[in-house]
Length: 378
Image (cartoon, rainbow, N blue to C red; front, side, top):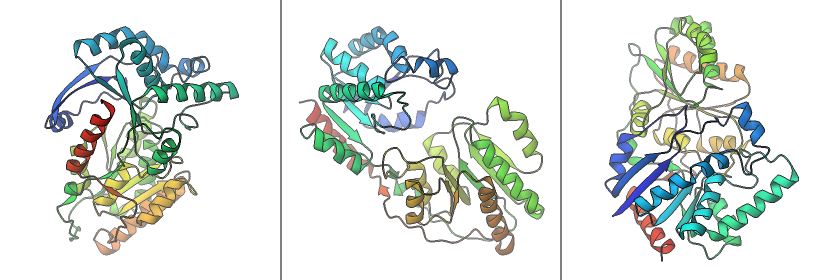
């Protein structure tokens, strides 16, 4: 049994604590969560974009250095023996600094690349050179890595063959979908489309607009269907969203836990997946798409034409695949589904292809992770 302390930076626009996840985690050991509070400068703020020119890898490094004293006290108070750092190169650098100061080992959880990551802007050749040197320094100080992609793992295996590594692929848990989904007469039920959108507000309104457009062209379906969006709309477009809701049924669920998401998938009829760009971690299937396909429900996949994610969607056999950048294509996909529902009174039948999808077996993952921890703490 392990005792785990999660040191969390709590974003202003994503204040979520998944109590059920903590209960799950406590089956394997004791879990503490310590929240440091959000950065005074939101990442998408204009000031942050300017400061990113002067801070490498980005402005969050400034926020972490402000909190380094607090983090050192947390480590000492909780007798922490190993750091597992995720998501941010700034956090990786901080872990390397803490290793120098406290002698504490750390593991890097690579969800994405560091150098060459499209999510981290490199403003000049100098930025790229410094990022490369920083990555090499930090990685050599680390005690091991975790990855979500086999290709990603092999890249680091060539350069750092002696570091322990653990592959934890995105996937779906078959136990979430043991209950078979049976087609039935839906003539008196509400047909539900489910779109797991963004925790921000850039694209969710576009899917609400596309759904409203499809309903306006098929008014007989107005009272038979609804769209649920998991995500946020944002204050700037709230009035526009309210106007759309006057003409069709659209619900917003700002944030939900994983177990609630699985329940929403079970209770929905057609699932809408969206991905706005190319995959930054090679050919990894996003867990959301894996869970959608694992449910056996028809999936409308909206992605950039020619991207890696489009290839994955085609291999997995999504029911409809449209270009994310073309709103008329998204409207047409909704409209095709509405016409099918009106004519057949059943949800579309299809055979999902599970090629490339990883099944998550928690008992196996726990054993693998324990073996990994033993290797990095020797």
